[in-house]
Amino acid sequence: MEILNNRAIITLSGPERRSLLQGIITNNVNELDNGGVYSALLTPQGKFLYDFFLVEVDDTIYLDCEKDAFTTLFQKLLMYRLRSNVEILDGSEKYHVISSDEKQNGISFADPRHPDMGYRGIILDTLKETTTNYHALRIKLGIAEGSNDYIKDKSTIHEGHFEDLHGVDFEKGCYVGQEVIARMKYRGKIKKQMFPATLSGPAPEFGTEITDENDNKIGDIRSHANGVAIALFRTDKMTFGTEYKCGDITVIPYKPTWISEDE
Image (cartoon, helix red, strand yellow):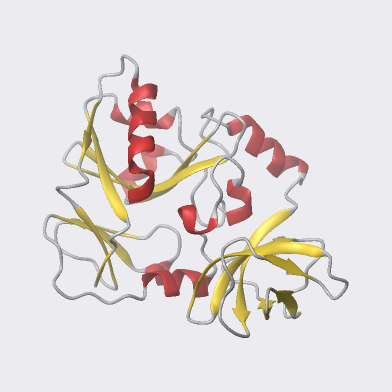
């Protein structure tokens, strides 16, 4: 069991809590009937702002987000609320987020992105001892997450395979940025995507260019752990299993098993 110190909680309650979120986030809020939901909030231009998890217990939706994004996301939700009958509260001091291999007592749900990510939980007390393998696991699986891998106001959710990770519903109707990302999907204009890559040495800093044998830029590196990194690649310029230069090391991208065959 691991406490995720980089996470914070926002709670939403009131009769219009679901309808508020349904009109602004990428996923279908009604999936809360089936457990936890992974989703994102985008700019009107379809660019990434925040990703987060939702779970509903006793007429309250708990939103699990990055701690560094908490303040601006909280303000965004207040802005979108307008006259909706929804109470939005800061739970960052009261609640803590955990990751575990098994379902826990209280607020606990399967990570909706991938079965190997185990369970997430929301607790009142911090843990005295924790493991530290959450990020290493998600990076090995090739799962991009928040500001670790996305660039706010620039990245798109297609770069992080949001559909394969069950974070977007293309049938639910309108939400902020919906027209742009739907057009990208149906017109096949997804040119860059993130994949895991093995590293030959210490990882360079975030954003270091990845180049091919002709020194042409084909991508850049993002988060890393235990000799593996998430990296953004030009999909038409890279080949899985091929060695590329990144700073003073080389990287070899590989395709996660969960990515659909047509990608």
